[in-house]
Length: 60
Image (cartoon, rainbow, N blue to C red):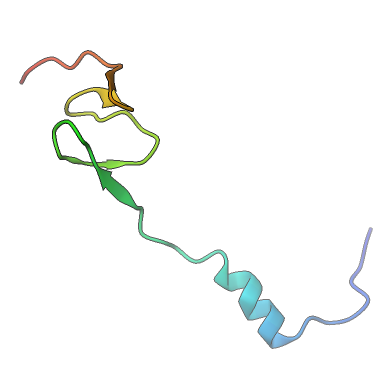
């Protein structure tokens, strides 16, 4: 099994752990209905993705 030759410094350790921090999800607004939607996902309220209808959404 591989073993590190030298101990990592505290600064390196903190940099590695800093990459795993939680980030708030980034939302974009839907061009059709204006609701907030995560990118690369079809809009759940109107059913559009990249300016075309991909999901049939029934009116509530």
